[in-house]
Length: 508
Ligand SMILES: C[S@@+](CC[C@H](N)C(=O)[O-])C[C@H]1O[C@@H](n2cnc3c(N)ncnc32)[C@H](O)[C@@H]1O
Image 1: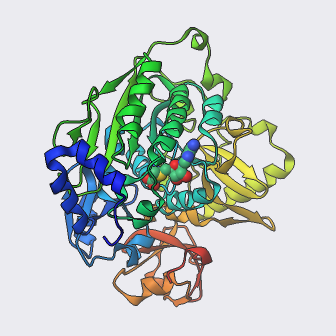
Image 2: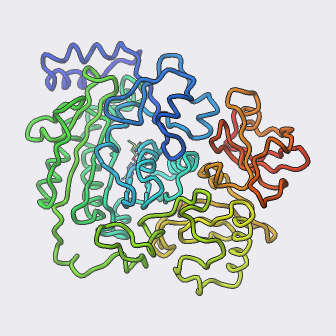
Image 3: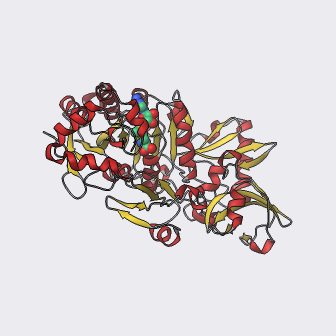
């Protein structure tokens, strides 16, 4: 790297690392490692390994993560545009592995943009449960929403809120919370020279104060017995072990779950060896810190008798902690709707969440939506229909649960109604599997056709290349796939494929 490391930073690292410092300093002469993580919402690891046009080497701490070799350009391949993988720094894949997300969990990713860890959480949820992805900075939530859409996430909500307001809206609600905290970024100096330029001697203290406030809010939004993972990409002790020690001193119901000292992870400093550090001279990745905090499960007096699910209009969970069948779309399990397998029988009424309260106008919008889904897919996704004007989202939470919160995406954007007709949204397509659509077409990733489609060009496609379910007509919306993985919509008529790939997403 060309940038000069700040003198007070190198001095502190010498004090921290002692005899290991020289080894650490040598890593700044090396090229940072690149990685991708398989999006198992769309493709299995085995199939990605068979398909990937570049060398992949496993990342020890993430079963879906792989190093990409020098010269690989994973962002310049049609598979990137079909959301088959996320390009992610290898060490950044570790915190979500420690969060131990299970399908059906309610998960909050509090500092989520641009969405690397949120897409990883979504893959672990496998469409079941709830993911709330939040970021304080409005501009950054755009990339966050787009990444979740590209990755085909159906059960995600994107907020642009302060942690305090989220805690006030969802007290004791989430099973798992990730705080990938804003930090001084010392662990990224080798990869991102801008982090070196922005760093000043007082930067770690400034971030430490911010991190403490974020942790306090996160603790208030966690369910009794829930798990919280705190991570940073900095070496500064005050932002890592210091922040965690302060939090534990003020929150006796929390304790550390051992995360460090084994395999690739080195133990944290001082009194907190249960925390974990990734060091660039010990692993193939940048610097990271992680702490896993578990609540002891006891209730504070004011929490007893309160029921946040009832307040949000969510059907109760059964004793196993999984959603009851009637609560499938309520932050519990959502159907995946593959070919209607787990999907709601077509034509039945909504989810019982106040459909009778819908206005006549909304009834007409819903009818247009129902007609489209019947004709195009033959099934309907479970969830709460949330209308923003004529735009429809299928949400894992009732609309009222988000009242007063700055909501960027209340759920899965499925489309809008124009002149009485339903126009499917791009995120509907990216989340579908080919067998879920009555009409689909697969283009070869290695042919020019895939790139032409991604550039927004019109293609000439004979009828026999379309895959059409029996009972469906040829003409209409087609789910365009690349080597069998959904990429977007097109409209087919008389041998011509009119491109519906959105302008802002196109291959340039
Ligand atoms: C390390 S980055 C997150 C990276 C992200 N988790 C990922 O994997 O792609 C930290 C994020 O925290 C956001 N942030 C800063 N202050 C915040 C706050 N008080 N509450 C929530 N988010 C905050 C920043 O905008 C930034 O996007």
